[in-house]
Image (cartoon, rainbow, N blue to C red; front, side):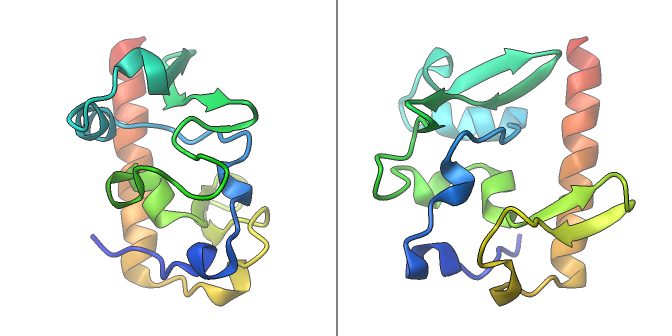
Length: 128
């Protein structure tokens, strides 16, 4: 899987980790559980969706300086700021990201985002 070149680390930006609504796939959850974390610690459930939990206004895995599971972070985090814009019906660089112009949206990344959205939707439907 390709990932976005990480300007976040270079600029020390944590904006996307603040009040995150990052969805989690079952494979994301299994991977993080494999690191020794309890699902209750990092997963929040709402309307069939599983998302990263926030603590004190940021992702539970962000200590204020960095992501503590960076090499094992969820797929959505790896692909961000590439997101699927439902209104436009295509993958875009999220306007919330202050460094989005530094990222290159490639066909490979766009395909990965679409596949992730499909997987998350199918998993949510199975839970409902």
